[in-house]
Structures are given as C-alpha cells and as structure tokens.
Image 1 (cartoon, rainbow, N blue to C red):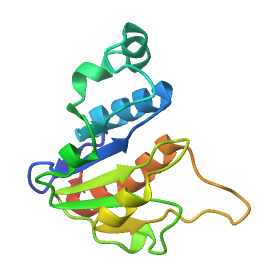
Image 2 (cartoon, one colour):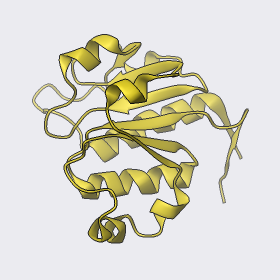
Image 3 (cartoon, one colour):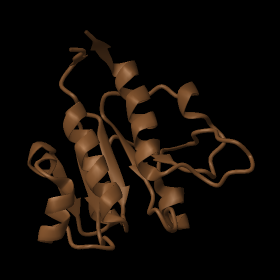
Image 4 (cartoon, rainbow, N blue to C red):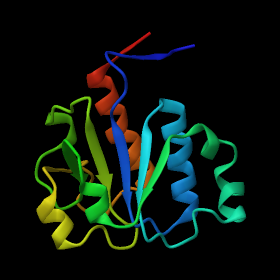
Length: 158
C-alpha cells in the first residue's frame, strides 16, 4: 500500500467557500480524510452541515476528516499564512506554483465561484488549465488535482 509521509506535520488545508452541492462537499470530505488534510468550510452553505441526510452522503468519512466551519470569510481569514484561490480567472498555472506546508487552498462556490472581495483578498490565484471550449472541472476533481500537487511537493510518498 502506498502511503504519504509528510516532511513535517501536515498543515495543508483545503477550504470551500459557501459550497452549495452536498454531494460534492461529501466527496471532498472523503478526499481530505483519505489524505489527512483539514477541510475548512466557509458558511453559509446551500445545505445544513448537521443534517442527517448530509451525514448519510458523507458516510463515516465525516468522522475521519478534520473539519472546521467558519461563519463567514472574515472569520476564516484570521491567522492564515497564505490563501491560494483556485479559479478559472487566474493566469498562473497550479503546476508552476510552489506550495508550502501551511497553505490553504481555497475553492469557490460551485454555482458562482467567489465574490470580487474574496478575489482581491487572497495571496495567490491559480488555474488548472483546461480546453478553451469548456467552462470548468467539477470542484471535486479540481480539489483532487490541486491537493495532489501540493502534497507531492510537501511529502515523501512511500
């Protein structure tokens, strides 16, 4: 079995800005649980995080994921080292970026991304390049791609 051994304790975090699709959030919870990465959720969500139906979709991974929710973006932003926004509006490609151990990789709302105020307050903006005649990847796919690269740069795979 391949195992990820972190160079130091894993301080990388994934953050979701006001997610609105519970199935996507549940899949990201599973992804973060499997990789041992904290998931921050910036509310309000388009669903209730404590709803039994959401728990059913997230399965037992919700208990295995380090999950923290924030009332709003201002509360979330306090005491952060670097916030890296994954967005279709960026120029810099994610694979040309040096992720650090304490980065928070932020993903926007599935239906609308993030507002301009959030765009203007992050440290870096990165894009996952896709074909010109397509809009975007599913958020779960985007999280997996960006997180895998950040982990690759900051861990030893055994």
